[in-house]
Image 1: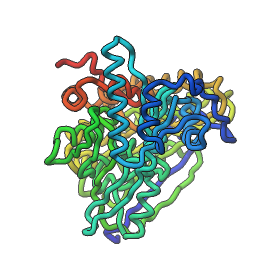
Image 2: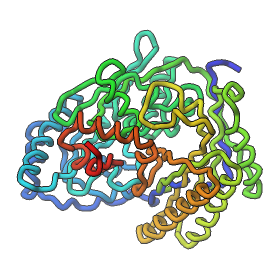
Image 3: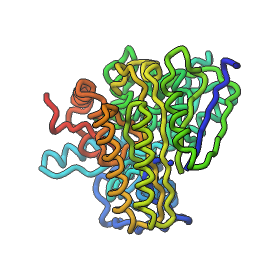
Image 4: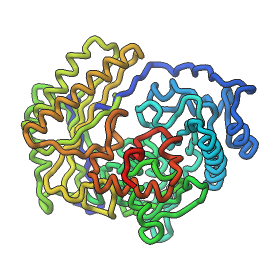
Length: 463
């Protein structure tokens, strides 16, 4: 096989829990609750300081930003204003203003103004990259993709989509470990760890980040790498948006030519045989499996919700059975599409690349990341979908615990809002992330004001 060719296989039967509500046509933007007389002082200050980068409803940029979120749950949220910085310096300027407001509110005993940061806006979790009545930092203009002259790395703006990255690199015969969905933003996926079709060869997406350009809570523009702020560098590999706003990633690149891919569709009656075949693949020992083959994603046909189990055939079969029970429980939900995705995570994959905060390096058994996605149309079904999917995940976890096949790791980028991915990194790694938060954000701006995403439980952290 050509050493630069990668094989991608997807076996589809009918199964995911990304949970998001969708609808056939673009929704009308909810009318914002803030007229010019009610806009808060900090928004006015931002607009005066960055007049070409701050937008209010009904400006077309504001409307486009809201309507471009992937999930309807995020489009239903209306912020006070949107900051769309054109450079890292503008991000730093905005953070300086927001930090002053945060400090003033804290000194007067008031709750902080809620803030959000957006890269691609692909999360289905309400409030992950948007905030009702607050301020959103939309990074999508920070979308540079610049390969190095020696072709060994590429600088990528945090607001780029993976499609932007792949188009540029493909023209140069290069690739990076990146998202498997081209519409996903670079920032969120990379900071959450990131799985790639190249992961069997080079590890998680985050393990290929050479350095980060980041705006810290005090407005300082800093670099994090193996030699500069190395603790922060490691913390950003899976630590999400808890330490600052990353404005640029420098990622390792490598030659890549042809990529072979395909879908194999099978009848639902073949589910057991497919799961057995998947189990055999995930049992492959290092040196036996082909690291140039991305491995199968087994999909049985979206809010995301996830869990992780050991590669045990009985547990995988019970996972499929739980999925089928969920389909029956929600059969009256209109326009519903369910998917269950089984993703192999081999020990060798988890150990590739640079140190991270994911806590997977000590695993010796193959794991399977279980992802449910549910897509539906009507808001009145939200509570039923949430209750049912949560119950299914709990039933799988209980079964796996009883069999000794459970694993605490939860892939952050696929977690539902009620899940706690940092607990799954292990106590030592979570303490390390909390220590980095205290060091680089001592006043807690990114814990208390930036409420989207998953936080580090700092109020219960030991000092």
